[in-house]
Image (cartoon, rainbow, N blue to C red; front, side, top):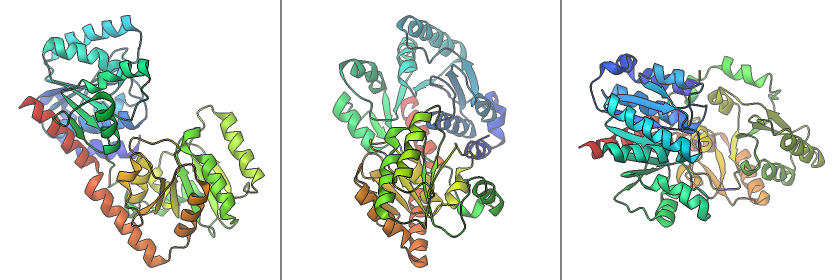
Length: 396
């Protein structure tokens, strides 16, 4: 089980495990499936916070590996084909959700994705229940996509996961500030804490990853997909011109073997084949960050939030991220890391040189700043408190 989720669930306490014993308001969250991802993680964390607060939590989805975590959080899961995008199926889902709301006595509906949001909106309106949505990114908006996406702007309250996303929602969908609220994503600052990572956990990763003891490690976590900027980082390493380093790309190729091969070939052409490592998805990222001297987020397109930069700062690691999207809100430039223009290997190389040249006192100051930033702004506790405050504002 993901350790971040485990800690979130444990934090809910004994009352969470009892689930339906609580008689507080019942919140229904809807999403396509309970797969492993940020949206699903936030769903579980919110469910755990609800039950810990004496509320009741229910989630409707098509199922998936994280359903078990909902049960541990004290939430009830209802299986429905909510990933479906065919209009007829979505209409059927709306009927089923309306029946569920009436049967279970749901007090509020929270939609976290577009396809199920259309069904949830119809059901909430028919049953006269408050409707909340969460924008997880700045969705593309050609005319067809605009129509499909606009359901996320129809909430009685619309949550954006960053000010960057909130501005997109304002400008693209005309949502006013009375309905729009920014609630940044949160991480578990107990899990992502250097003091809580043992040497044994670090060794379990460093050995199979073949990390040398005498070289600084540059790490880019993120699935192997083009917009994550792996190629930009490789070009920056070539400009940096150092062979006394190790660069680790952490993330499975998810079947994109051709892209992985292209990156490895790029590294060979640049004479970096002895520098670069590509490793599979890691289930213990807290330990992984401890192995890094600098963590990079090189996304070529703006991210709605950017969890990697926050996790790395919590672990006291200096961060280099591209200067757009949510990263502008999560990094204290020159204090906990650096922001560089996207798609500019020269700027990335300069930032890498700066990060690798930090002396011990500078590293310690940057680590303290990063940790302070996370504890003040980006914890799961803060995120859940703010989400429950939104629910309360609608329920009175």
